[in-house]
Image (cartoon, rainbow, N blue to C red):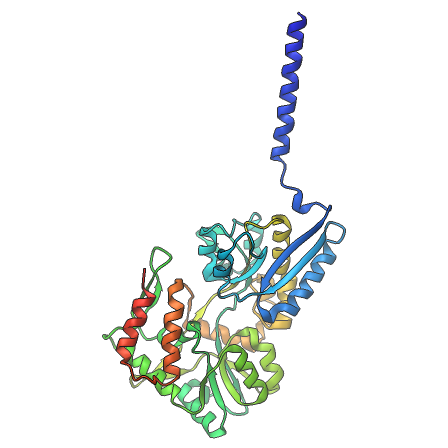
Length: 412
């Protein structure tokens, strides 16, 4: 009898211990939310966003004061190649990072992003196009930040009329007369797409989501690849044209040497500071190609905020990502950086709707395509365009250069 009682008691103890262990296993990881040590978070963002992000970090820490002690470290990192840097060392990468939407599928496939837990809340608060850009299939993997990742024309109204800005060649004539420059960044394949996008020549992702198709070397059709290349050479030959990076564009705007250029909303505040009431913004002009006027195209997209799946403090990293992309901070981003919000309420505010830069982006959107190209697109196109910007000094066959470009872009 005593033996039976003992066995019964032992069984009950084992059951209680097993239940207790199960409860501990089912509890969420509290380590990163605990208030027993500093929460160290590294954030990657655009170099131009540092002051804005520091202000956002301060408000985040004030909001959660008493819940944790934070050490938030900002590190500049280009949004355009964030994926490559992060996937080079996921465990050592940033906890929270800004990136262009064309990288979301690769980051998710590589395990760098986990699905967003409160996806419905984020989806309901964001523009549908931004939600689509932040998703793979129907699963949300990132927090929408901006819905303005495109480019358009900035111009100084003191030098150009509304009619002048309809044609790139006309703009170059006016700039040459004024001994000033019209610029565009031909070192970036992102901008170079402008010359090929509305010609019938095509590029994009294959069904595998990794490799590209490209017909930019086509010898058939109303516009051939060599026709576009020759148009680029004609433009580059103008003494009023120069290939300039974004930083060089702003420098020239400020010193007066540049009176027009192709860029995005992230430079709206700086351009307006320099040109004041003469600041103009419009869709891209047309350019002459094989005897006809072709409307310049553009890539479009969104900027997103991701949370590293390997973060040591995933709950706090997610809270910080959501704070950075909140309605209030997207409004602040527009005020300080001129960037178009992905948050629906912020995007529909009178301030955003009346912005000349946003209006120009909307006008250009008719001629834009969501950026969906694989990694092998960028370098070959940049190399080709760089040679065009220099006037093709080697004299190499344009068709041969285009054939090499396509071979590299479509390589598997």
